[in-house]
Length: 120
Image 1 (tube, one colour):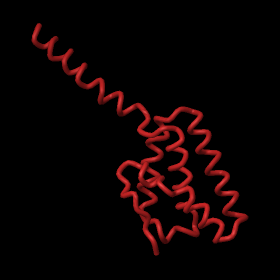
Image 2 (image 1 turned 45 degrees about the horizontal axis):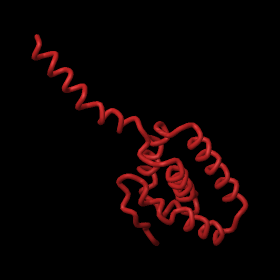
Image 3 (image 1 turned 180 degrees about the vertical axis):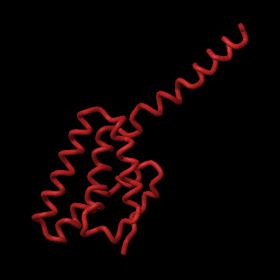
């Protein structure tokens, strides 16, 4: 009985860091918003043919969203809405320039990303 108690305590202590890493943010708020901005540009119909990886990226960001504080979630939501409004009103060259600026380095922040953009 004593052995089982000791094993249970050791297992609980050993798993505590794993549980903390599963529930704590993997990105800072600024990094998260930057990654969301890049994914929002990549999700636009104008760039759909260039970004076959976007579904996986969006899935990763949705998982990270659950770990982020409310302020980061609100900032990311506002950024996505602003990009959607811009896409409705901007020309292709302006969108491409803004996309390049938003995505410089953002791909490297996304866990599992290659860090390289696919060019067509």
